[in-house]
Amino acid sequence: MLILYYMFTQKKLTSLFNNATRIPFNDDSKMVFMSDAHRGEGGVADEFARNQNIFLHALDHYSENGFTFFEIGDGEELWENRHMIRIKETYHEIYDMFESMKDKRRFFRIFGNHDKSNRKLGIPEALVLQHSSNSNQHIFLTHGHQGDLINDQLWWLGRFLVRYIWKPLQLTGFADPTRPARNFKKKNKISFRLSKWANKNRLLSIFGHTHRPTMNGPEKSFYVNCGSGIHPEAITGVEIENCQISLITWKIRPCNKGILHVTRSVLVSHQLQDYFN
Image (cartoon, rainbow, N blue to C red; front, side):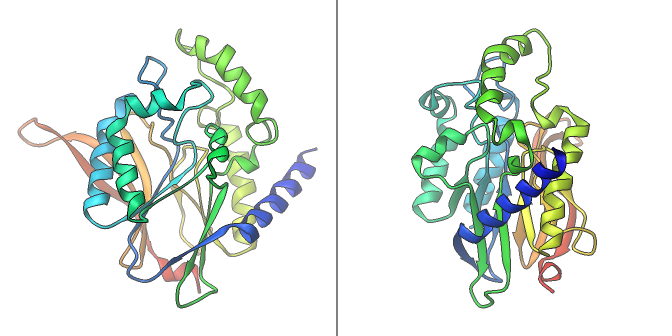
């Protein structure tokens, strides 16, 4: 069974890559990739609420500095919540900024498992970035739930469990076991399936889903994971600027006078060209 699902995952990722819309980039492109914000309606179960100011500050930085923002799935928590309009009302400043960047063709998104219903709006499951002067240089973007049975083929079952069983339990302190972010073994299995495909194809691939920020460098793996927007008091992402690809984190830290402010840190960085050699 596991071998069959592994083979299915590999085949599906290949199909997504072959059929995805191509978006051009070049050596001057500035891009940022984030996933798994899981924006909710602002209630007790909304894990994004504690990081909304960090996210808004980071988004403002990227908007002001000419970055193109890619949201790699699970932007909204539509398993626990039914109404997209309420989420947009709760985080209207963020969605206003998304719209402003979208008007300049500097905002793109794909759907994940928790916001899969957005596919009805024409949001794709995958995108491919292709270098404008070298058609052999690609960056593959998809959420990563394709390596996770209950969150892909059985996503409707996962949504039912979260919406009607785990959300009420979450309010009393129970953790949702369907999420890979809370299951270490599950994260490892999913990362293994995704990284095997990326390494076999020698294709720089940026995923989300596991909530585990990962960038081991092209000499070890073509698999990159941008983490999530619901780490405790921090958000993580991947940036491409000046032909460098970096894993970054934004968090609230005090200065020497005790004033809290949002800071950006680079966790690891590599030459982008090394992924294409």
